[in-house]
Length: 484
Image (cartoon, rainbow, N blue to C red; front, side, top):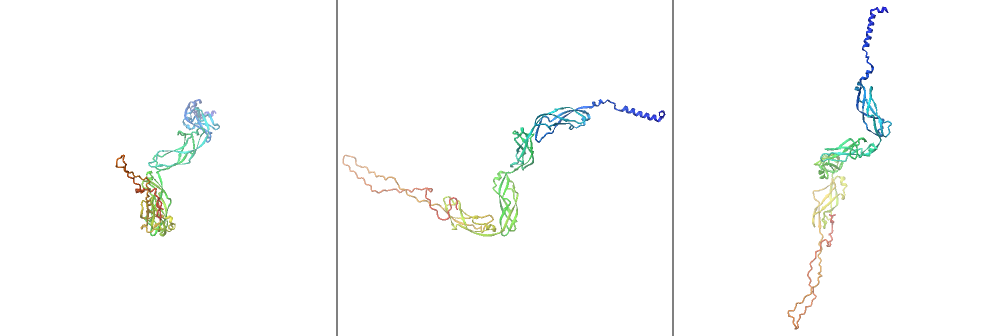
Protein backbone atom coordinates (compact mmCIF):
# COMPACT_ATOMS: atom_id res chain seq x y z
CA UNK A 1 0.00 0.00 0.00
CA UNK A 2 2.78 2.37 0.94
CA UNK A 3 4.43 1.50 -2.29
CA UNK A 4 1.29 2.57 -4.27
CA UNK A 5 1.02 5.80 -2.29
CA UNK A 6 4.51 6.64 -3.27
CA UNK A 7 3.78 5.89 -6.86
CA UNK A 8 3.07 9.19 -8.68
CA UNK A 9 0.82 7.71 -11.33
CA UNK A 10 -1.42 6.07 -8.73
CA UNK A 11 -1.87 9.35 -6.94
CA UNK A 12 -2.89 11.06 -10.18
CA UNK A 13 -5.49 8.45 -10.85
CA UNK A 14 -6.85 8.64 -7.32
CA UNK A 15 -7.02 12.43 -7.50
CA UNK A 16 -8.97 12.23 -10.77
CA UNK A 17 -11.45 9.78 -9.32
CA UNK A 18 -12.04 11.96 -6.29
CA UNK A 19 -12.54 15.01 -8.53
CA UNK A 20 -15.12 13.21 -10.58
CA UNK A 21 -17.03 12.19 -7.46
CA UNK A 22 -17.00 15.72 -6.08
CA UNK A 23 -18.20 17.19 -9.43
CA UNK A 24 -21.03 14.70 -9.52
CA UNK A 25 -22.14 15.51 -6.00
CA UNK A 26 -22.14 19.23 -6.72
CA UNK A 27 -24.21 18.99 -9.93
CA UNK A 28 -26.89 16.45 -8.81
CA UNK A 29 -30.48 17.91 -8.18
CA UNK A 30 -30.75 17.85 -4.40
CA UNK A 31 -34.04 19.79 -4.21
CA UNK A 32 -36.54 18.18 -1.83
CA UNK A 33 -39.32 16.06 -3.44
CA UNK A 34 -42.16 18.16 -2.09
CA UNK A 35 -41.19 20.95 -4.53
CA UNK A 36 -42.76 18.96 -7.53
CA UNK A 37 -46.35 19.93 -6.46
CA UNK A 38 -45.56 23.54 -6.93
CA UNK A 39 -45.93 23.14 -10.77
CA UNK A 40 -49.60 21.87 -10.59
CA UNK A 41 -52.28 24.17 -12.10
CA UNK A 42 -56.06 24.17 -12.43
CA UNK A 43 -58.11 24.43 -15.64
CA UNK A 44 -61.82 24.77 -16.49
CA UNK A 45 -63.19 22.86 -19.50
CA UNK A 46 -66.56 24.10 -20.74
CA UNK A 47 -69.31 22.25 -22.65
CA UNK A 48 -68.15 18.68 -22.24
CA UNK A 49 -70.90 16.70 -24.00
CA UNK A 50 -72.76 14.10 -21.97
CA UNK A 51 -72.61 10.80 -23.82
CA UNK A 52 -75.24 8.05 -23.49
CA UNK A 53 -74.25 4.43 -22.99
CA UNK A 54 -76.33 1.29 -22.63
CA UNK A 55 -79.60 2.82 -23.95
CA UNK A 56 -82.03 0.91 -26.22
CA UNK A 57 -82.85 3.76 -28.61
CA UNK A 58 -84.85 1.53 -30.95
CA UNK A 59 -87.57 0.80 -28.41
CA UNK A 60 -87.36 3.73 -26.00
CA UNK A 61 -87.21 7.50 -26.07
CA UNK A 62 -84.94 9.42 -23.69
CA UNK A 63 -85.52 12.93 -22.38
CA UNK A 64 -82.80 14.48 -20.15
CA UNK A 65 -82.30 17.92 -18.64
CA UNK A 66 -78.53 18.08 -19.15
CA UNK A 67 -76.65 17.87 -22.46
CA UNK A 68 -73.21 19.10 -21.38
CA UNK A 69 -71.22 19.89 -18.18
CA UNK A 70 -68.34 22.06 -16.97
CA UNK A 71 -65.24 20.27 -15.59
CA UNK A 72 -62.62 21.82 -13.29
CA UNK A 73 -59.39 19.78 -13.33
CA UNK A 74 -55.89 19.95 -11.76
CA UNK A 75 -52.52 18.81 -13.13
CA UNK A 76 -49.11 19.77 -14.41
CA UNK A 77 -49.07 22.61 -16.85
CA UNK A 78 -47.57 20.36 -19.49
CA UNK A 79 -50.40 17.84 -19.04
CA UNK A 80 -53.10 20.48 -19.08
CA UNK A 81 -51.64 22.25 -22.09
CA UNK A 82 -50.97 19.32 -24.35
CA UNK A 83 -54.07 17.21 -23.64
CA UNK A 84 -56.92 17.75 -26.09
CA UNK A 85 -60.40 18.53 -24.81
CA UNK A 86 -61.82 15.35 -26.31
CA UNK A 87 -59.63 13.42 -23.86
CA UNK A 88 -62.13 14.42 -21.17
CA UNK A 89 -65.28 12.26 -21.24
CA UNK A 90 -68.57 12.44 -19.36
CA UNK A 91 -71.25 9.81 -19.84
CA UNK A 92 -74.55 8.50 -18.51
CA UNK A 93 -74.89 4.77 -17.99
CA UNK A 94 -78.47 3.67 -18.76
CA UNK A 95 -77.86 -0.05 -19.12
CA UNK A 96 -80.02 -1.09 -16.18
CA UNK A 97 -82.34 1.94 -15.98
CA UNK A 98 -86.09 1.23 -16.22
CA UNK A 99 -88.73 3.42 -18.00
CA UNK A 100 -89.94 6.35 -15.94
CA UNK A 101 -88.28 9.31 -14.17
CA UNK A 102 -84.75 8.80 -12.77
CA UNK A 103 -81.96 10.96 -11.32
CA UNK A 104 -78.57 9.46 -12.24
CA UNK A 105 -74.94 10.39 -11.47
CA UNK A 106 -72.59 11.24 -14.31
CA UNK A 107 -69.51 9.15 -14.99
CA UNK A 108 -66.26 10.75 -16.17
CA UNK A 109 -62.66 10.10 -17.20
CA UNK A 110 -59.63 12.44 -17.44
CA UNK A 111 -56.20 12.16 -19.10
CA UNK A 112 -53.27 10.63 -17.19
CA UNK A 113 -51.83 13.04 -14.62
CA UNK A 114 -55.01 15.15 -14.50
CA UNK A 115 -57.49 14.96 -11.65
CA UNK A 116 -61.10 16.18 -11.44
CA UNK A 117 -61.70 18.87 -8.85
CA UNK A 118 -65.38 19.57 -9.64
CA UNK A 119 -68.06 18.85 -12.29
CA UNK A 120 -71.19 20.99 -12.70
CA UNK A 121 -73.73 19.45 -12.79
CA UNK A 122 -72.71 16.02 -11.59
CA UNK A 123 -76.10 14.30 -12.04
CA UNK A 124 -78.92 14.25 -14.63
CA UNK A 125 -82.72 13.89 -14.47
CA UNK A 126 -83.90 11.53 -17.21
CA UNK A 127 -87.31 10.39 -18.45
CA UNK A 128 -87.52 7.13 -20.40
CA UNK A 129 -90.66 6.25 -22.37
CA UNK A 130 -91.44 3.43 -24.80
CA UNK A 131 -91.54 4.42 -28.47
CA UNK A 132 -94.87 4.26 -30.40
CA UNK A 133 -95.11 4.09 -34.18
CA UNK A 134 -97.97 5.19 -36.45
CA UNK A 135 -98.35 5.45 -40.23
CA UNK A 136 -99.13 8.85 -41.82
CA UNK A 137 -99.83 9.83 -45.44
CA UNK A 138 -97.28 12.13 -47.05
CA UNK A 139 -98.50 15.55 -48.16
CA UNK A 140 -96.79 18.42 -49.95
CA UNK A 141 -96.71 22.11 -49.15
CA UNK A 142 -96.42 23.65 -52.64
CA UNK A 143 -95.52 27.35 -52.55
CA UNK A 144 -94.91 29.91 -55.28
CA UNK A 145 -96.52 30.34 -58.67
CA UNK A 146 -95.23 28.67 -61.86
CA UNK A 147 -94.31 30.69 -64.94
CA UNK A 148 -97.11 32.66 -66.60
CA UNK A 149 -99.58 30.44 -68.45
CA UNK A 150 -98.37 27.21 -66.83
CA UNK A 151 -100.44 24.95 -64.62
CA UNK A 152 -99.53 22.65 -61.73
CA UNK A 153 -100.71 19.07 -62.12
CA UNK A 154 -101.32 16.39 -59.50
CA UNK A 155 -98.05 15.48 -57.72
CA UNK A 156 -96.71 11.93 -57.67
CA UNK A 157 -95.17 10.82 -54.34
CA UNK A 158 -93.26 7.61 -53.67
CA UNK A 159 -93.87 6.21 -51.10
CA UNK A 160 -97.26 7.69 -50.31
CA UNK A 161 -97.05 7.00 -46.56
CA UNK A 162 -94.36 6.82 -43.87
CA UNK A 163 -94.08 5.73 -40.23
CA UNK A 164 -93.56 8.23 -37.42
CA UNK A 165 -92.12 7.12 -34.09
CA UNK A 166 -92.51 9.22 -30.93
CA UNK A 167 -93.35 8.75 -27.30
CA UNK A 168 -96.99 7.89 -26.88
CA UNK A 169 -97.58 11.25 -25.21
CA UNK A 170 -96.25 13.12 -28.27
CA UNK A 171 -97.50 10.94 -31.11
CA UNK A 172 -101.02 12.30 -30.75
CA UNK A 173 -99.68 15.78 -31.55
CA UNK A 174 -98.69 14.80 -35.08
CA UNK A 175 -101.18 16.37 -37.53
CA UNK A 176 -99.38 15.59 -40.80
CA UNK A 177 -96.12 14.57 -42.39
CA UNK A 178 -95.15 17.02 -45.08
CA UNK A 179 -92.45 18.01 -47.54
CA UNK A 180 -92.00 21.49 -49.00
CA UNK A 181 -91.81 22.25 -52.75
CA UNK A 182 -91.03 25.71 -54.16
CA UNK A 183 -92.38 26.36 -57.68
CA UNK A 184 -91.82 30.10 -58.11
CA UNK A 185 -91.31 30.78 -61.84
CA UNK A 186 -91.13 27.05 -62.66
CA UNK A 187 -91.73 26.25 -66.34
CA UNK A 188 -91.01 22.52 -66.31
CA UNK A 189 -91.89 19.50 -64.21
CA UNK A 190 -90.39 19.60 -60.70
CA UNK A 191 -88.59 16.39 -59.75
CA UNK A 192 -86.81 15.52 -56.50
CA UNK A 193 -85.69 12.00 -55.54
CA UNK A 194 -84.89 12.76 -51.88
CA UNK A 195 -87.32 15.34 -50.52
CA UNK A 196 -86.95 15.72 -46.75
CA UNK A 197 -90.07 15.17 -44.62
CA UNK A 198 -91.16 16.88 -41.41
CA UNK A 199 -93.69 15.87 -38.76
CA UNK A 200 -95.88 18.88 -37.94
CA UNK A 201 -98.48 19.58 -35.27
CA UNK A 202 -101.84 21.24 -35.89
CA UNK A 203 -100.23 24.71 -35.77
CA UNK A 204 -97.56 23.82 -38.33
CA UNK A 205 -94.74 23.52 -35.78
CA UNK A 206 -92.13 20.82 -36.38
CA UNK A 207 -91.85 17.96 -33.89
CA UNK A 208 -88.06 17.72 -33.90
CA UNK A 209 -87.88 14.49 -31.91
CA UNK A 210 -90.01 12.58 -34.40
CA UNK A 211 -88.29 9.68 -36.13
CA UNK A 212 -89.67 9.38 -39.69
CA UNK A 213 -89.04 6.24 -41.71
CA UNK A 214 -88.23 6.74 -44.51
CA UNK A 215 -87.15 10.31 -43.86
CA UNK A 216 -87.24 11.28 -47.57
CA UNK A 217 -89.48 10.54 -50.54
CA UNK A 218 -89.30 10.87 -54.31
CA UNK A 219 -91.60 13.61 -55.66
CA UNK A 220 -92.63 14.70 -59.15
CA UNK A 221 -94.88 17.73 -59.63
CA UNK A 222 -96.05 18.27 -63.24
CA UNK A 223 -95.69 21.89 -64.36
CA UNK A 224 -97.05 22.23 -67.89
CA UNK A 225 -99.02 24.46 -70.17
CA UNK A 226 -102.77 23.73 -70.29
CA UNK A 227 -103.44 20.83 -72.65
CA UNK A 228 -106.23 19.47 -74.81
CA UNK A 229 -106.53 16.07 -76.47
CA UNK A 230 -107.65 16.33 -80.09
CA UNK A 231 -108.61 13.76 -82.72
CA UNK A 232 -106.00 13.37 -85.48
CA UNK A 233 -107.14 14.09 -89.04
CA UNK A 234 -104.73 13.26 -91.88
CA UNK A 235 -104.96 15.15 -95.15
CA UNK A 236 -102.79 14.60 -98.20
CA UNK A 237 -100.55 16.52 -100.52
CA UNK A 238 -98.88 15.31 -103.67
CA UNK A 239 -100.26 12.46 -105.76
CA UNK A 240 -99.79 8.74 -106.18
CA UNK A 241 -98.03 7.53 -109.33
CA UNK A 242 -99.85 5.89 -112.24
CA UNK A 243 -103.10 4.12 -111.40
CA UNK A 244 -102.47 3.71 -107.67
CA UNK A 245 -105.06 4.66 -105.08
CA UNK A 246 -105.03 4.63 -101.29
CA UNK A 247 -106.62 1.67 -99.57
CA UNK A 248 -105.71 2.31 -95.93
CA UNK A 249 -103.93 4.92 -93.79
CA UNK A 250 -103.25 3.79 -90.21
CA UNK A 251 -101.40 6.12 -87.77
CA UNK A 252 -99.78 4.83 -84.58
CA UNK A 253 -102.43 6.68 -82.60
CA UNK A 254 -105.53 8.63 -83.51
CA UNK A 255 -105.32 11.28 -80.77
CA UNK A 256 -102.73 13.99 -80.02
CA UNK A 257 -102.22 16.34 -77.07
CA UNK A 258 -101.69 20.04 -77.71
CA UNK A 259 -100.28 22.41 -75.06
CA UNK A 260 -100.98 26.13 -75.05
CA UNK A 261 -102.99 28.91 -73.47
CA UNK A 262 -106.55 28.13 -72.42
CA UNK A 263 -107.88 30.75 -74.86
CA UNK A 264 -106.09 29.17 -77.82
CA UNK A 265 -107.13 25.64 -76.92
CA UNK A 266 -110.79 26.63 -76.89
CA UNK A 267 -110.60 27.32 -80.62
CA UNK A 268 -109.24 23.85 -81.49
CA UNK A 269 -111.52 20.89 -82.17
CA UNK A 270 -109.16 18.64 -84.14
CA UNK A 271 -105.58 18.48 -85.37
CA UNK A 272 -104.85 18.15 -89.08
CA UNK A 273 -101.57 16.61 -90.25
CA UNK A 274 -100.45 16.58 -93.88
CA UNK A 275 -98.97 13.47 -95.51
CA UNK A 276 -97.02 13.71 -98.77
CA UNK A 277 -98.18 10.94 -101.12
CA UNK A 278 -95.49 11.65 -103.70
CA UNK A 279 -93.07 9.58 -101.62
CA UNK A 280 -95.02 6.38 -102.45
CA UNK A 281 -93.76 4.69 -105.62
CA UNK A 282 -95.32 1.22 -105.65
CA UNK A 283 -98.40 -0.69 -104.54
CA UNK A 284 -98.24 -2.24 -101.09
CA UNK A 285 -97.84 -0.96 -97.53
CA UNK A 286 -95.16 1.54 -96.58
CA UNK A 287 -94.23 2.96 -93.17
CA UNK A 288 -93.99 6.75 -93.38
CA UNK A 289 -92.83 9.21 -90.72
CA UNK A 290 -95.32 11.99 -90.05
CA UNK A 291 -93.95 15.17 -88.44
CA UNK A 292 -96.43 16.97 -86.19
CA UNK A 293 -96.04 20.71 -85.65
CA UNK A 294 -97.81 22.63 -82.87
CA UNK A 295 -100.77 24.66 -84.12
CA UNK A 296 -100.21 28.40 -84.34
CA UNK A 297 -100.33 30.03 -80.92
CA UNK A 298 -99.61 26.81 -78.98
CA UNK A 299 -96.47 25.69 -77.18
CA UNK A 300 -95.98 22.06 -78.11
CA UNK A 301 -97.66 18.90 -79.29
CA UNK A 302 -97.25 15.31 -78.15
CA UNK A 303 -96.19 13.22 -79.88
CA UNK A 304 -94.02 15.42 -82.11
CA UNK A 305 -93.82 12.65 -84.73
CA UNK A 306 -95.41 9.30 -85.44
CA UNK A 307 -95.25 6.47 -87.94
CA UNK A 308 -98.15 6.02 -90.38
CA UNK A 309 -98.77 2.80 -92.32
CA UNK A 310 -99.91 3.78 -95.83
CA UNK A 311 -101.33 1.09 -98.16
CA UNK A 312 -101.78 1.66 -101.92
CA UNK A 313 -103.32 -0.58 -104.60
CA UNK A 314 -104.18 -0.54 -108.29
CA UNK A 315 -107.46 1.25 -108.98
CA UNK A 316 -110.56 -0.73 -110.00
CA UNK A 317 -114.25 0.04 -110.54
CA UNK A 318 -117.55 -1.33 -109.29
CA UNK A 319 -121.14 -0.46 -110.12
CA UNK A 320 -123.93 -0.44 -107.54
CA UNK A 321 -127.59 -0.32 -108.59
CA UNK A 322 -130.76 1.05 -107.02
CA UNK A 323 -129.18 3.24 -104.34
CA UNK A 324 -132.21 4.94 -102.73
CA UNK A 325 -132.46 8.74 -102.83
CA UNK A 326 -133.25 10.25 -99.46
CA UNK A 327 -135.23 13.47 -99.08
CA UNK A 328 -134.04 15.86 -96.38
CA UNK A 329 -135.01 19.35 -95.23
CA UNK A 330 -138.74 19.22 -96.13
CA UNK A 331 -140.45 22.21 -94.51
CA UNK A 332 -143.23 21.61 -92.02
CA UNK A 333 -146.67 21.31 -93.67
CA UNK A 334 -145.25 20.23 -97.05
CA UNK A 335 -145.09 16.80 -98.58
CA UNK A 336 -142.41 15.82 -101.06
CA UNK A 337 -142.01 13.21 -103.75
CA UNK A 338 -139.35 12.41 -106.32
CA UNK A 339 -140.72 12.74 -109.84
CA UNK A 340 -137.56 11.84 -111.75
CA UNK A 341 -136.15 9.27 -111.54
CA UNK A 342 -139.44 7.54 -110.98
CA UNK A 343 -137.80 4.73 -109.01
CA UNK A 344 -136.34 7.24 -106.59
CA UNK A 345 -133.01 5.39 -106.85
CA UNK A 346 -129.62 5.92 -108.50
CA UNK A 347 -127.08 3.65 -110.18
CA UNK A 348 -123.49 4.59 -109.28
CA UNK A 349 -120.10 3.60 -110.67
CA UNK A 350 -117.37 3.83 -108.04
CA UNK A 351 -113.57 3.66 -108.12
CA UNK A 352 -111.05 2.62 -105.48
CA UNK A 353 -108.91 -0.20 -104.13
CA UNK A 354 -110.35 -3.68 -104.70
CA UNK A 355 -110.50 -4.53 -101.00
CA UNK A 356 -112.55 -1.40 -100.26
CA UNK A 357 -114.91 -1.83 -103.20
CA UNK A 358 -115.66 -5.43 -102.15
CA UNK A 359 -116.88 -4.17 -98.77
CA UNK A 360 -119.42 -1.70 -100.20
CA UNK A 361 -123.18 -2.12 -99.88
CA UNK A 362 -126.17 0.19 -100.00
CA UNK A 363 -125.87 0.99 -96.28
CA UNK A 364 -122.36 2.40 -96.75
CA UNK A 365 -123.46 4.91 -99.47
CA UNK A 366 -125.79 7.88 -99.01
CA UNK A 367 -127.54 9.79 -101.84
CA UNK A 368 -129.45 12.84 -100.53
CA UNK A 369 -131.77 15.41 -102.13
CA UNK A 370 -131.70 18.41 -99.81
CA UNK A 371 -134.78 20.69 -100.19
CA UNK A 372 -134.25 22.76 -97.07
CA UNK A 373 -135.86 26.21 -97.29
CA UNK A 374 -137.86 25.45 -100.46
CA UNK A 375 -141.59 26.16 -100.76
CA UNK A 376 -144.24 24.29 -102.74
CA UNK A 377 -143.25 23.66 -106.37
CA UNK A 378 -141.17 21.45 -108.62
CA UNK A 379 -137.37 21.68 -108.42
CA UNK A 380 -134.28 20.11 -109.97
CA UNK A 381 -132.15 19.19 -106.96
CA UNK A 382 -128.44 18.38 -107.19
CA UNK A 383 -127.86 15.16 -105.31
CA UNK A 384 -125.24 14.87 -102.58
CA UNK A 385 -123.37 11.55 -102.60
CA UNK A 386 -121.50 10.46 -99.44
CA UNK A 387 -118.92 7.68 -99.90
CA UNK A 388 -116.47 5.85 -97.63
CA UNK A 389 -112.94 7.23 -97.50
CA UNK A 390 -110.69 6.51 -100.48
CA UNK A 391 -113.75 5.67 -102.66
CA UNK A 392 -114.55 8.08 -105.49
CA UNK A 393 -117.47 8.53 -107.87
CA UNK A 394 -116.73 8.00 -111.54
CA UNK A 395 -117.45 11.08 -113.66
CA UNK A 396 -117.76 13.08 -110.47
CA UNK A 397 -117.59 16.26 -112.56
CA UNK A 398 -121.10 15.62 -113.93
CA UNK A 399 -123.76 16.42 -111.36
CA UNK A 400 -126.47 13.98 -110.39
CA UNK A 401 -129.89 15.65 -110.45
CA UNK A 402 -133.34 14.57 -109.28
CA UNK A 403 -136.67 16.32 -109.93
CA UNK A 404 -138.57 16.82 -106.68
CA UNK A 405 -142.13 18.11 -106.15
CA UNK A 406 -143.12 19.86 -102.93
CA UNK A 407 -146.89 19.98 -102.31
CA UNK A 408 -148.78 22.19 -99.86
CA UNK A 409 -152.02 20.93 -98.28
CA UNK A 410 -155.26 21.95 -100.21
CA UNK A 411 -157.39 24.80 -98.71
CA UNK A 412 -160.77 23.56 -97.30
CA UNK A 413 -164.13 24.51 -99.13
CA UNK A 414 -166.29 27.30 -97.59
CA UNK A 415 -169.52 26.14 -95.81
CA UNK A 416 -172.82 28.29 -95.77
CA UNK A 417 -174.25 28.98 -92.35
CA UNK A 418 -178.16 29.55 -92.25
CA UNK A 419 -179.51 32.73 -90.61
CA UNK A 420 -181.55 31.69 -87.57
CA UNK A 421 -182.84 35.20 -86.67
CA UNK A 422 -186.75 35.67 -86.48
CA UNK A 423 -188.73 37.00 -89.53
CA UNK A 424 -189.89 40.65 -88.95
CA UNK A 425 -193.73 41.32 -88.98
CA UNK A 426 -194.94 44.25 -91.23
CA UNK A 427 -196.35 47.25 -89.30
CA UNK A 428 -199.67 48.80 -90.79
CA UNK A 429 -199.62 52.43 -91.93
CA UNK A 430 -201.64 54.80 -89.66
CA UNK A 431 -204.91 56.46 -91.06
CA UNK A 432 -204.70 59.99 -92.38
CA UNK A 433 -208.31 60.76 -91.36
CA UNK A 434 -208.85 62.37 -87.95
CA UNK A 435 -210.67 60.40 -85.33
CA UNK A 436 -214.44 61.28 -84.96
CA UNK A 437 -217.70 59.82 -83.98
CA UNK A 438 -218.49 59.02 -87.61
CA UNK A 439 -217.82 55.65 -88.99
CA UNK A 440 -214.29 55.32 -89.86
CA UNK A 441 -213.14 53.33 -92.82
CA UNK A 442 -210.18 51.10 -92.01
CA UNK A 443 -208.12 49.69 -94.81
CA UNK A 444 -207.57 46.02 -94.40
CA UNK A 445 -204.08 44.84 -93.55
CA UNK A 446 -202.59 42.82 -96.33
CA UNK A 447 -202.18 39.22 -95.48
CA UNK A 448 -198.73 37.67 -95.58
CA UNK A 449 -198.01 35.75 -98.72
CA UNK A 450 -195.80 33.20 -96.99
CA UNK A 451 -192.73 34.15 -99.08
CA UNK A 452 -189.64 34.76 -96.98
CA UNK A 453 -186.80 36.89 -98.33
CA UNK A 454 -183.44 36.01 -96.85
CA UNK A 455 -180.08 37.76 -97.13
CA UNK A 456 -177.29 35.82 -98.73
CA UNK A 457 -175.10 34.51 -95.92
CA UNK A 458 -171.42 35.46 -95.85
CA UNK A 459 -169.10 32.42 -95.80
CA UNK A 460 -167.35 31.98 -92.45
CA UNK A 461 -163.52 31.48 -92.64
CA UNK A 462 -162.28 28.32 -90.94
CA UNK A 463 -158.68 28.47 -89.70
CA UNK A 464 -156.29 25.86 -91.21
CA UNK A 465 -155.70 24.34 -87.78
CA UNK A 466 -159.41 23.25 -87.65
CA UNK A 467 -159.80 22.45 -91.33
CA UNK A 468 -159.96 18.87 -92.40
CA UNK A 469 -156.65 18.05 -94.17
CA UNK A 470 -156.66 16.99 -97.77
CA UNK A 471 -155.20 13.53 -98.32
CA UNK A 472 -151.59 13.79 -99.66
CA UNK A 473 -150.77 12.91 -103.20
CA UNK A 474 -149.35 9.50 -103.86
CA UNK A 475 -145.59 9.03 -104.26
CA UNK A 476 -142.50 9.19 -101.99
CA UNK A 477 -143.69 11.48 -99.23
CA UNK A 478 -141.49 12.90 -96.49
CA UNK A 479 -142.70 13.56 -93.01
CA UNK A 480 -142.61 17.00 -91.50
CA UNK A 481 -139.28 16.38 -89.73
CA UNK A 482 -137.20 16.25 -92.82
CA UNK A 483 -137.96 13.49 -95.29
CA UNK A 484 -137.37 9.82 -95.66
